[in-house]
Length: 405
Image (cartoon, rainbow, N blue to C red; front, side, top):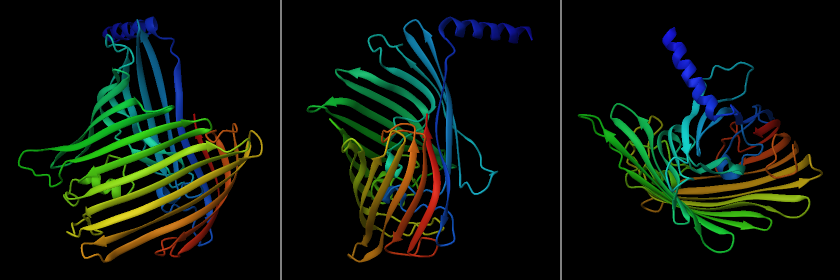
């Protein structure tokens, strides 16, 4: 007991000398329910391609406690966050809670680079997303370490090594390199990123999947009434299928070997603009294509089937503000694509569209103001199948809340 008391006293004295114990509480949540005309509840269909408003069927919660400790000119930040998701179907749901973040980030400890930050632990690593479609086009979050915002002239360099899975054959890793704050023209900047996913094999084991590279360029343009981003991405092997065939973010890499010959490309434009005193609008335009995409059957077995693919997406979310609390939000989206084999024969077409009207109340009149309470109606259509509760169309009415803090 004496030893424990001495250690506790030493820790308390050290922290008290450099901290005001100001804990930062932050997080995000969404929750809601709906009633479907086809007999189900709320629906999620092609969300990344046609938009998320009135098109989500889950509850998600995350909240964190962060503490900043100061020592001389240094800032040591301890970040923590837990997260949990469920379908919201009952009052008590048996779902586990995930430790989404737990890391230490130290700023100001490198001489001559006061803005550089050293970090280690588990963290959300510089995620890039489009909110209206819940699409993270670059997300290599996980457990690892690195350095952020190292000054290289006027640019900022960030380097990280992050683990990405482990099984009986070996372990996967991501080496992530980014260079930001590259000046272009007036109010415009460029950020470039390269995520290299590789694996290490255990003794007498083989990993069939090749290493992959996901290269990203982001042009950010500020305007007098909002902002616009243009994103260009290209991927190989497991990153090829992520870029082309589904809305991958750079993690959860497939090392089965199914996608070793794959190459993928996508181009995205998105942003938010103020259209006057009462109107704001967000949008997403996306084109995805790929060649030599491999395949698996429903049991996860390789099919040795290769195909080319392409798809495009258009989503718009205009918002009319009645006052600084009440707004009416519209969202329309269309997503369509196809898969073609080497002989030029179409293997599969897919597509759908939706239109949502929501009456909402938020804490402020900005497009980004949250919390936001919503009552919505959504019409959805599957143009190539019957994936909407067994039908090719559906109508859902529901309520939802979304908040970040």
